[in-house]
Length: 217
Length: 217
DNA sequence: CCAAAAGTGTTCGGCTTACACCCATGT
DNA sequence: ACATGGGTGTAAGCCGAACACTTTTGG
Image (tube, rainbow over all chains, first blue to last red; front, side, top):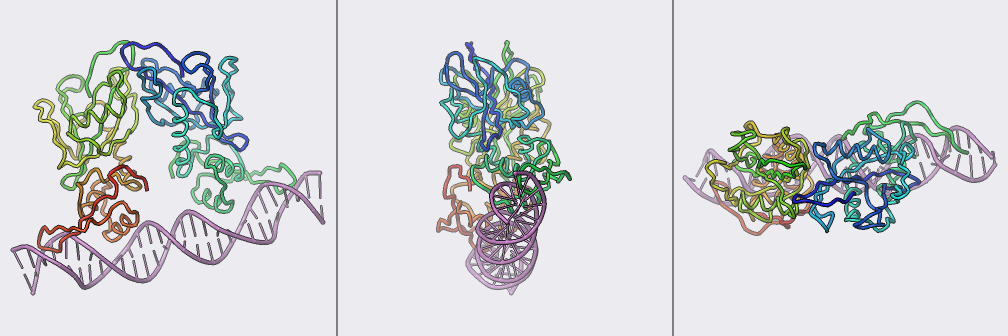
């Protein structure tokens, strides 16, 4: 989130919580603040909304700048009015889900954008911790009744990989048989016909999401 | 929603969707616009967010102005950035649930604030129709897993009255026995001990919500 | 042949749904 | 006594949760 002087009106800020799952952990993209306030702390990417820019478009643009990705799961989260104790402002928060293997983070020496495990975050600027908590609650909820996970995985994947994504986000293990019955009963994934061998064990069948647009089931 | 000239920054508007159930119909509070744009059309109450005012507080204040009520169910809905095609603006929408017998609407000759059945709305200003649709979807959803209905009913009520509120909002009839089992299984209402006679039939037992704060079950 | 992950069914309990009659009262 | 809305139980189906062994491969 960028800080600017104000005039007589509250600023409209934008904040984007970009999640990915990597190494069995849910991670969020943070950048390091190089100036006040909260200099040196980590913060969510964001910025000031410019005149004439629609909110969702601005969030998508910011996401593209940080990750090089478009057409991923992106949803408005909440609008906070107490983000910055130092000045009146309103911050519209979005959250996005990306596949970290497809994301190309910027190489900025000062801002050091990078993925940070949600379990074990450093001290954050503004009330970004509350924003991330809110986003995580929403994400867990959405996993249960939408296909949002499509945005965290590559085109094809195994059911074990999908299960690990769910487990990383929900924070607890799932029963393999029940998970498969559940995910297959809703028809959000389909078997591609292919399979993948990667070790001294039986190869895994490959699946793909039937839709890569947000769907509620 | 009040219209004002702009300078170089988007305005932050506030819109409040105030619902009530009256006469077996879900109704929303509308006021008539006395000036451009959309002069003469009906619109949701709202206004421009002033500097230094927290969003929720501003929504609560606007609700108090229109209905004389405080401490009712009030929840942030969504932040729209395409409300007014004529100028860049962001509108933070809230929705509230009130008991119409407790609400005291303002008597403004020009603005004519009043309750309008959601089924059969007149032509509305801005994209207020979309805001109401969004609020209705959220409300139906919330009825299913929160005690939000407390805010639509007086302190004590009969289970038939409660059922009629649910039916008016959901838009379809519910089975009496199943509704009672369902609402009593969650313990969101309790029998007060009293009853009420009002006609040539058996008196109805009176119930009250166990909590008049928002609770998720 | 051994280790490793993939894949697969059944049982139980609880919740939702459908459905019809008696109760208490006022007129 | 009759009309009116209040109040109640049971059976069936579906869904979620618990739980263990066989399959296929690489080394």
